[in-house]
Image (cartoon, rainbow, N blue to C red):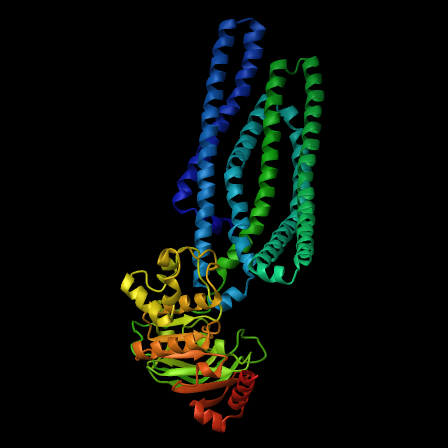
Length: 575
């Protein structure tokens, strides 16, 4: 896992290497300082040689200055490398998300995906930025300082043989117990993000139903859960510091006790003990660094596992069968198509769908709520893949078209209309970034959006706000239709995308589509019979099955489901 995470370092790998080299060189300088200090005490002070003291003191200053410069360099390179690694991981994760189908997105909660791209990545990059120095410095200092300590006095250095196993056992027990707590803590962050996302997305509903207090209570529960999980994880992690200090002070006391006895009997000099203690402190500080690195690594591994779950998600809509072909006419054939969202689902959402839509036809799809109308049309641009059967466009299975071309050739105005932050023009250019002003105005005329754009203060340069909050539902629908038309698709799918406009405006849009775009295949999903009654053919869906195909008159005469929908809407209009 660690190797895979570092594989995303890319152009920042050199900075991580520079940081490691700086830390190693800095450690060498710091290791020399206690030796110089011991020489000053045992030779310079003992013999009263002031020249030697100043000479060695100057050398110590040079070592300290070199260590300082290298420390600054390691901090700089670690920060660049860590933040760069985090940026690359986020970019790769976001690029992976763009390949997801609807089914892939359904495997993760949106709030969890946000956490995995923010909090989890931040944990990793902070571990690199803040952990590179101790991770490189700790082992170098530990090995070198231990070697020098045994060189100074091997008998006294035996104390480490007791201290090191004690510390290792404590660290092992802490990490084994804290690792699952970090994973639970990240899951608790997912829940907090989910509640925030839901509340902000549906803020108008919350205020309309005066449910602010209820939402505060919900947030309080998940927030308390996050607090509890975090406290448990960090409380256990902080015991590492207590264990380290216990071992460190116990080691120092033991060395002072045995070292003092050695000085009394003449087996050791004061300078040697002073230098030895300096190396002991370096060794113990190195051990503390290493133990902290293990804790940081434990948390990073929990986050890395969550990130790699996103990266390893198998894309269920692939282009393995893609050929160099294009949609030229827009003829669509469903041949005994079955579909369900999950392979292990007990029932099919769509069953035995067989129908043919001629190129250039206008086709209506009606049915009761939950009859899988939207699911049916989402199979055409491969937002979902069929489970069995065959779906052909212009005689070729849809999986033989390159996805980019297929989705460019099939424009779909989804049931839930979405506009993005930016100007009205920028939103329209999503359909075709190269469209000129004349093409934009023509698309808006066909979609009926021109009648309100002229009344906006800045026209096409009006800011939409996040989600298009500056326009009404009906205006948003017409803008989304215009955006789809700018793609100049061969197939246009309107998924209940005129439900918020009045019938007169809807009729004008339908007439413009018929007159200006006669060769475009148009599929209209609607709740109102009036929206599809003039279609070349109407498909009646019920419970995921085709229950009738024909014109308005044919279905009214021979299809009971269609007649019931028509009569209920007629009665409603009469009332």
